[in-house]
Image (spheres, rainbow, N blue to C red):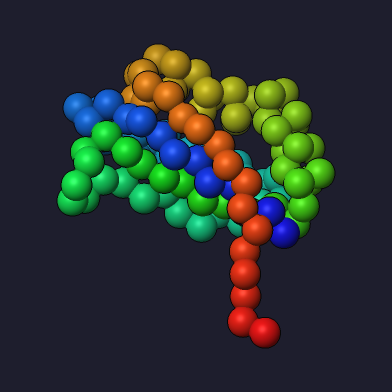
Length: 102
């Protein structure tokens, strides 16, 4: 299993737009076989950082999701929404391996 950690630098004045953008991705990640763990928006502390976590059974399956997302009409709507609203300024992606109880 691979968990994708996305750290966004968001526009704090467009928090509502970023939240909408995040909600667009929930069914899309699930559509391609991923498990969505949540988007975590600023509360206390920095007001311009958000984090999203989701998992795929393997890195190969995540890579397939990425390829398919660039051709999927619903994903294109989400990409365009982010482009139109400029609700985030940048993001970085890291890949994590979860640790479970023995």
